[in-house]
Amino acid sequence: MKWKPSQLTQEQKEERRLEGGRLLKAGTLSQAEIARQLGVSRATVSDWAKVVAKKGLKGLKSKKARGVDAKLGQEQKQRLKKILKQGALRHGFPTDRWTLEQVHQMIREKFETSYHPKYLSRLLRQLGFSPQKPMSQAIEQEKELVQAWLEKDWARIKKVAAARRRSRILG
Image (cartoon, rainbow, N blue to C red; front, side, top):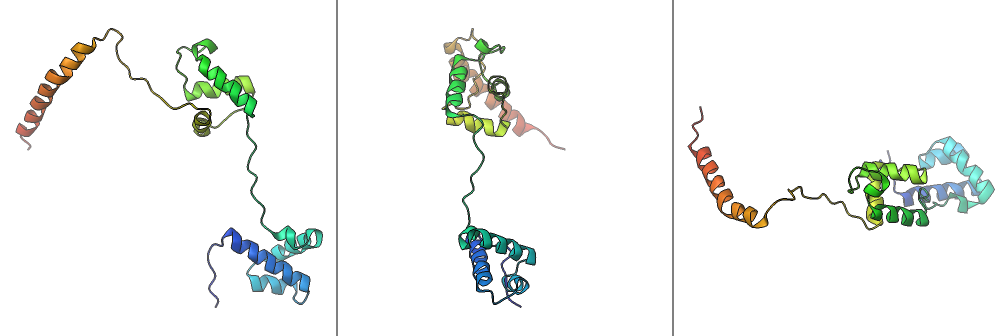
């Protein structure tokens, strides 16, 4: 029995198709014999024969995957960037901070298309935006008092808590 890999690379598949095409053109073997020799189904060889008849061996070469067209064109992306820079408040949202859900909603309303939330982050990075979450802190906060508390009181509180944990009796 001949060893056969469980999965072929794109190059190996193309090579196999081209060999099948050459054997078909030579006309010495039947489609069933070619299928057996190359380890494919007879239907596959039949499909190759149709392609070879129409386009020749070139038709069996691999084609580059095209991918999906962008949902928003370059002009629309620039318009979206301008909208996002104006802020969420200006567009009827309760705070000025954009969330992915709000951006998703804005794109749906303004451009009549929809992006998957996981892709939306990538789109925003392409437009030059980065995910940021503002730190929550009181407006009335006095920086000197906070710094003094962190340096003196917080260190003392941590030491007391550690001492309590060490003296705890388990049982």
